[in-house]
Image (cartoon, rainbow over all chains, first blue to last red; front, side, top):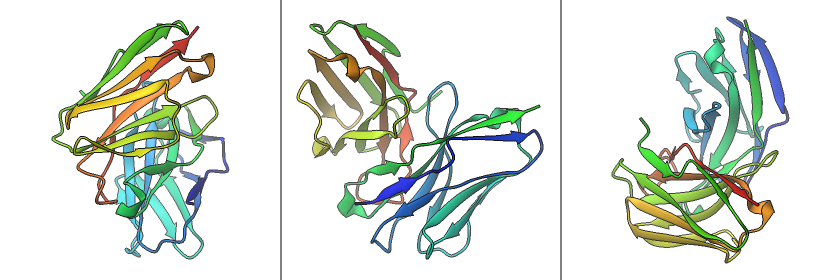
Length: 116
Length: 115
C-alpha cells in the first residue's frame, strides 16, 4: 500500500524568507501524481502545486516550487519570499493510477507559521 | 466562492439522532468523495462515487451511509454515531476517478460534534 510521510509536524519561517517542507512516500507504481495542498484556518483544502511522476522537471507555481526526487521518493515544497498569508497546514498527497480508485493519500501535515 | 459547497458547516448531534451532511459541486465533475479529518491524524478517505456509482467504501462503519443521487450532489447520512466520530468531514470532487492527474477540489468541510 502507498504511504505518505511528513516528518515535520511544525515549521516556522520569517516573513520574506524561504522555507522547505519535506515529504517522502512509498509506492511500487511508476506512474503517479504528487500534490501539495494548503489548509488555512477556513479548513478548505486548496491545491498549491502538483507534479507528474514521469516528468523530470520540477513543478513551479509563482513562489512555490518542488524538489522531486523520484528515486529517493522525496517530494519537498519550497516557499520563497514567505508571506503572512502562507501560514497554514500543508499536506503532501499521492494519487496513483486509475486502478487505485482515484483516491488521494495524504501525509500527516506540517503546520507552517510565518513570523512578521 | 468555492465550487464545492457543504452544508451545514457546523453540526452538533446526540448519539441517538439522525442527521445528514450535504455536498454540492458546481464544477461539472463526475466523481465525488467524502474524507474524514480528525485531530492529529491524516485525512482518511471514506467513500468514492464515480458517475453516481460507489467505487470505494474504505471499511466505514454502517452508521455512516452515503448517497449520491446525481453527479452534482453527495450526502452523508448519520445515525447512532459515537463521540469518536466527531471530526471535520470534507467533501471533494474531480472530473472522474479514471485519471490520477485530475485535481481534486475540496469544500470547506462540515464540523461534526457528537455529544
